[in-house]
Image 1 (tube, rainbow, N blue to C red):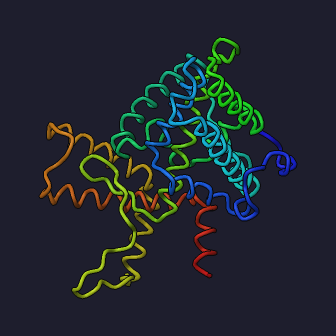
Image 2 (image 1 turned 180 degrees about the vertical axis):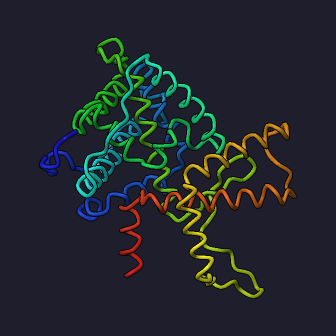
Length: 315
């Protein structure tokens, strides 16, 4: 990856000073403009425009290729800064390495396919390529992305895509990019990482409903009846029991086990969603969400986002 000493003026050209200080705001802007489904469609149309002779008519208008290139470059720049800050504070992000075709490699491939199927169902199709460890630590995706190519080369790649999209000439005829689909997949994963960061930054709870993880506002809906207190005091005994439980039973392991039970329950029921009045499943899902929150909090995964939230709270 590019060194931390790299002159930012040479690689960060789209971000304002405020966005350089808080790169996560670029991600918030991205998903205020459109949904991840539409960003995926735009990216796929962008690739088709660059690799077919039809060119920009694959998109709505010629300017779409230029606009999408700029937005993707802004996303890359913000993710690059997030990764730099992460490594500057916590050290270099280490990627797992497996020898091709080894026993560990085959097991990793099997586990990857299983996680892809499960996460598609959990996140309602919004997450399709991310692994569990990447959901827990999004910087793994950012590290792999910029180890594949430095930021400047990713920008050159997008410039090529835009050029061929506007020329109505297939880049497959004039270039030798044998990793084209690999690069496309990495761009999709970058969008998914941005979506999960946006999803969690906005304070939306991770709730599984009817076999999918839906977005729910963190703020409790108020009614005309007596409002619930914002905090409920816990006795010292209960606090100690909770801490002891989390120390002896890692939330990550328990939440994964509960998820397997949940998937087994759906298979047993013979359909993709439970009965609406199934209070047992409702209670189970509430417990899963609690453990998932405990897992994320214990790992301190999103330091950058939490720091920004704390600063905003002070203001």
